[in-house]
Length: 471
Image 1 (cartoon, rainbow, N blue to C red):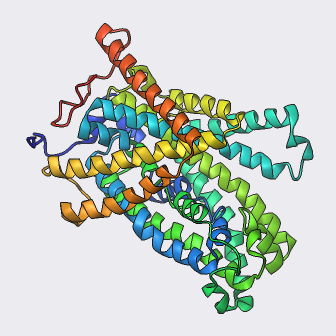
Image 2 (tube, helix red, strand yellow; image 1 turned 90 degrees about the horizontal axis):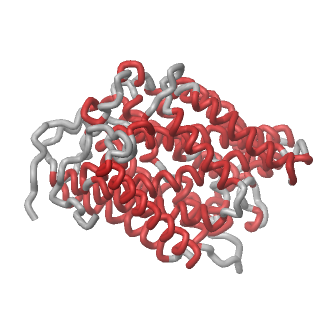
Image 3 (cartoon, rainbow, N blue to C red; image 1 turned 45 degrees about the vertical axis):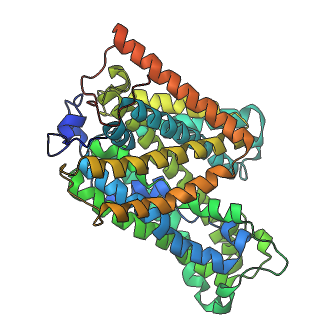
């Protein structure tokens, strides 16, 4: 297999955004809002870290949130920084897979990531209603709950429609308000901390739940690449993206660790009580009911931030796929008022509303499975592009040679494979159906191009050494 050089020395924003006549208007997301959008793509606060203690005890939970970022988060963030600055267009990981292996793999990457994204979006309005129903019990079931889910989804989607600049600034505000109670709780807890509790391996007789432990770490420290789909909307992405990812990684890890150290050191309860949401109970023990209520309000605000960040990623992914010819050109249409990809927002919103009324435990697990497939393809794309196209200008370059880069990717890839191997038969079935549907969609789009049924952007991947010719 020969290695071909791409003639151009850099994949510029112009090459990857041929449909963007308003490029100057689009690129206005600055450093601080971008940091907090990344933060909400990944975490949104320490909500959801508690099951790690329930699964393996305080010591291993603390070590997990100390060590796992170096195994998973840092490699994913480094890859995102390099490829986003080398290919600074909307679409992110779809663009990378398409540049590495051709349109088929770009399309399949788009299917996997888009479906996993919109299914995750569906859970956030439901989470908001779960908290609000404590104040308004009428929302617990029946048509009032259904109306509340639809209304909250539409309202949050409209906020997204008003533009990334507004969404980014809202993310900053949401982060400040939702994290403030954890800062207060950690400070108030200092006199009550007993350091020997940090080295506890858990209660005697309680069996370690490794599946819960690793899944908790994985899903609390994941999705660093989602922000790559917004690259075409960022001001000076070559400089802004690497710095934003660096700050976001540090900020996210600290926001997990400080409350975890505070609560595990100050509160002694039965290990089984460390379920999702226990931080609110701990706040009441440490400071009183007022802080518990604040943390519960913060959970709702965090869910809103997560919704906005994920919806932005999914909508701009659709836009990017249209700009490189994987989707018809009309999918890249922007709002005349806000310059946002309104069709991508609408499509993502409608699918998430549909999913929110399903019993989607297995569907969410399947979405996570698809995301894992996408990550394996992303690691492969990164290594292939570094080997196949070494001359492309990379404003940020991971400072490692190819063999060490392979090792860096192999470790998280091994973890992904383990998670996929322990999946249930239902997850395999649903994921298989979604993947087959994605392949069928690619074939249909290819037929549309052949028959000239709809218009596509002219920008499309030139044949690569690894091009798939089966289809």
